[in-house]
Length: 49
Image (tube, rainbow, N blue to C red; front, side, top):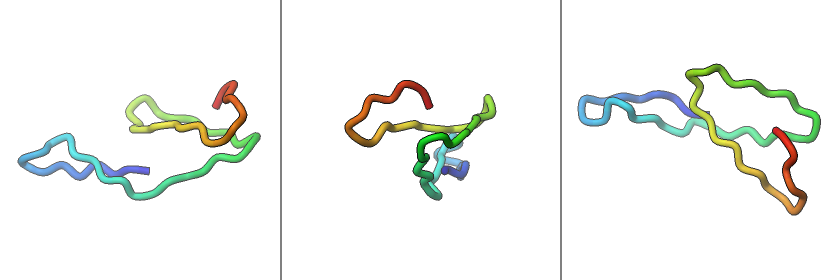
């Protein structure tokens, strides 16, 4: 999870505030303005997230 932390020097600055590990069958959605990154962890290929 990230928070927008703009400054005069860096108006688009963001700061990481946490992480969420998703388990099988979790449901998650993102709003259009959400900042997100999805990374697959493990040996099995990711079909969808």
